[in-house]
Image: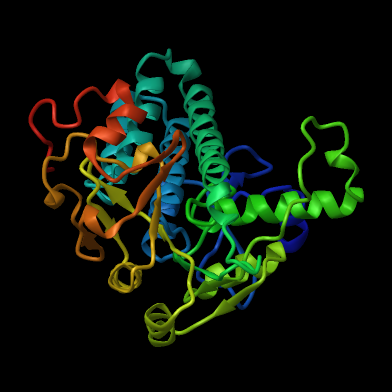
Length: 355
């Protein structure tokens, strides 16, 4: 079966899924795109590590899901907890400051810890499946909350292009992506309305207006451009210099920013090229909409240094107009995030974990 045939079986694509033998994973190899769609198999922790380090698996959400499955694969090879914990620490050091990665590994480890040896592998794989499913659902929720932000139009009713500051969307997550979720959702609604001839909207009270296609999306990323083309979304790929000039000259309705990790105070860690776009947008008065799941927030981080990494740039909260999470839209500050996620208690309760 070709890569395209395997991919076409998904209504909303996943970038990682279980192999037919149930003892391996199938990964979309991001290195090959956009030139070609290629798949890569992974059957061990070593395979997962290689896929991440070589760039086949990119993005914090996707790396976290891959690591969760990697730990489950380790348990399938040897359910002894000593072997499992060796695999746990091997995967954890990939990025010890990434809350998504550590959170996923902790969940699978906990599932293993409470399971008898004969059930460890199956329970760990089930927990990894749950992590992947929750990631997909959380990103879909981000899209639903963000969808109204796409519906703004100027006085003539013509939508203004937006700019995506994201290396990729669903390729780096499970099905939707954070910054791209609203675009994919808007396009799917428009496609369903067209295919049904408008009948899908009949019987709804009060009547809904016909859905509009998403606005033109500007992007500097070849991977994001490939995703948008694959979904049938109007887009234009720009180089970085042209994108910066476009932000200064306009028109751009907003910059939609993909966030690698964040503090509860609203400080963000993002890729340097995307940080440059966000800073240029802020300087030009263009709103910056930062999209992330709660799992990407280092809730006990008291300082931005807790989320720093050599390959990431830090943005202060004043750059961002809104945060969009799976529970809604809020200001980029501790009080607003605590209102959305009260189970986190005070964002600064206790000593921050700078490790």
